[in-house]
Length: 252
Image (cartoon, rainbow, N blue to C red; front, side, top):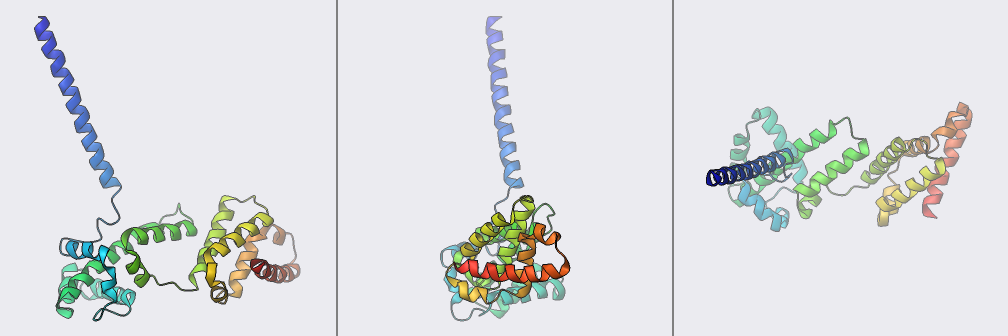
């Protein structure tokens, strides 16, 4: 009897251990599926090898024979796939290999698949109601960093002086939304600090792209409480004074 009892205990112990191992495996697989690597769908079976090679030598896309404006090329190709080929990715693949009958066709296809992956994930972010515009910009930027190598990011998303003001305004809106009872002095301080971080050594060029509407929106956000108590005539002169004040304070 004691021997049988010992066997039963051993059997139950092994059964519990196997259950734990199986449960752990199921959890791991579920987590992997629930939180996929952004790069996992950056290629399909036809582009995997070339996409992996691009991680180490993305500068090949700057070589002869490749599109000079890569972003425009990919957007045009996306339009053809959607409307001309009714979403048939196989036709896109054939088109690229026929147009670029060497390594370039395979490389461009790998980039296109990654670009479409980025587009899909970007759309998911932009349709989320729980994120502010600044949080969406940040999330989309993070996706581009996770999916594309640096050189490829620079080709697809080149710097432009109109971008920092958009980021800055979104940042200010996000800050005020999360800190609705903050005072205008604190809002102004946060705004100027972020502006210095975003503009850095390109202050003069970027500031030349700041529109009057941009400054009006900034003033309305920072001094919303003060403007609320003024007449329309007072607001006009107050806005003008505060806009000039913000410009001067940025350089001091």
